[in-house]
Length: 496
Image (cartoon, rainbow, N blue to C red; front, top):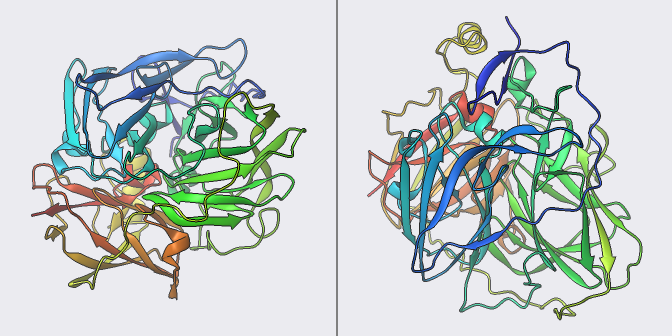
């Protein structure tokens, strides 16, 4: 079987032979942390969010071909407010079809931006949706079936912040100063400084892992932050990498929000595991610091094969990692120049979590292969049609509806992953986690979710969808290892 990689070469994801004569180059870090522009997307006029090709400087002296929304790489941070209407015109100036999925947002199916809503180069898709979601850190990315992995990898993603004017939280809130978005991704480069996206062999089975950590498009950057409370909104924007974040000095910090919004109270932690597409907001107290502080992650390794536990292991430098810790970024405390809160609030305006009793139960099994493993793997790696992943024994079919839900009815979903850990994502809603591996979960510390890492022990979640989705534009349920999603580990459901 021929080894393959995907690079930007005048298109979003053009296949090219592996360039063995161009070895990877050392990726230096330490540049200032870029802060994406903040754009309000709920004004009287629609904002433009145009996907385009660009060139981005990851490595000194090299211009890397990339994709981005409005920017050369990634996109601006979009901000919307609960109770208002988001207005976004998404244009396509790339060489391939794209979409814009509002990951985590509670929007109707025809505004969700999933695979059914992909549109061609030169076209524009107008998204208009009322914002019902509580205050939260969400994100957006392209979601074209079979192309999500390379498109997100090359830059079609960005942060999406929801504010609730009626529920002040008392947390640091000055964007880019003490309230900072961190889109964390792993990337690899060849000898010419181009992004390398290799999905041969284990990279297809375990998902693609880069060898260099970037934050907001910079390699292991340095962020100047005030001496005081600092809020970090962390988005795991990697294709497949699981992180286990902790500060180098082992200090405690507080988690204040998860995927779906605020927790009911700050939760003290020393480490923060995040699966692909999960988000968390944390607050770290730097009021007594003078020296730089590094944020690290255990090197979880590729694949997490065997259904190994992501969420229950030892400390970050102990049972959680497979190699030396990965440097994510460095915080350098500075004398404050703007006012901010001096203490954390004792409670937070968390969204309600009373889902009621479920009216039905569904089972979803995340399969590493559907049909003939040998034949479909050969097909995938040689570029012919074929799928090696599935849910409940069936690979994704855009023409098939896998479940039909009733609006505002609560269901219990039992999700299993026999072979390895998978981040399971449900569109159109936030769900409540009931149990992991047969053990009950404390909703106060878990919060509302839209992604859950499921291992061999399985998980139970309560799902209630309040938005409609018809057969033409259904919602997705899928593994958020993007290589698995592209290979067929995805289903779709309607809500009527």
